[in-house]
Amino acid sequence: MSEVAAATPIAVAVPEIKGARVNGKQWKQTKTQFRPGMASGRKTFEERQVERQAYAAMKAREKEMKDEKIQKKKELSEKLKERREKKEEKERYEKLAAKMHQKKIDRLKRREKRNKALKER
Image (cartoon, rainbow, N blue to C red; front, side, top):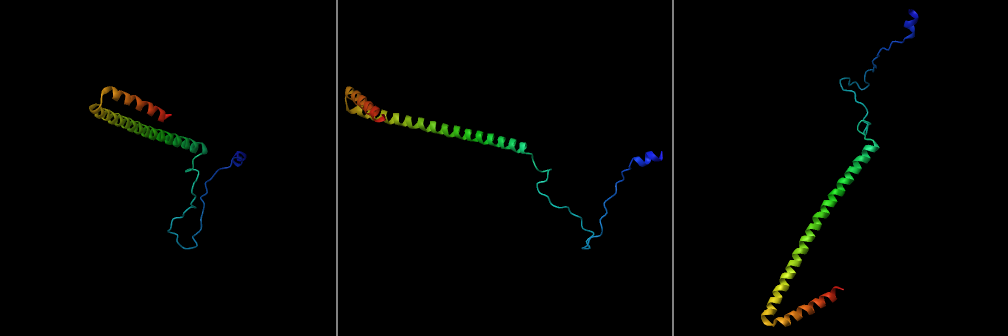
């Protein structure tokens, strides 16, 4: 039996003994070295990639929403502008109608449409 006891080593926890401090401040707490970015706080490359992709997707969605908003605003202003132009033209023709004969007004309208078509080319 003595052979079996000698073959199996017994693990005894021996506490690490530190001597007295050189500076004499034994009441102070011992501190460890500061290590920023330790493994506990660090993320893996894959996790960072996933975060970057999520951030990029969010930014793309924000940009899309802003573009939609700007587009709606432009469409609204275009409609308003067209409506005003039509109203002004209608008022102008009404003033002409009070002064001139209807056939002459129709001729003027046709002529103006032709000129407008030529200008747009």
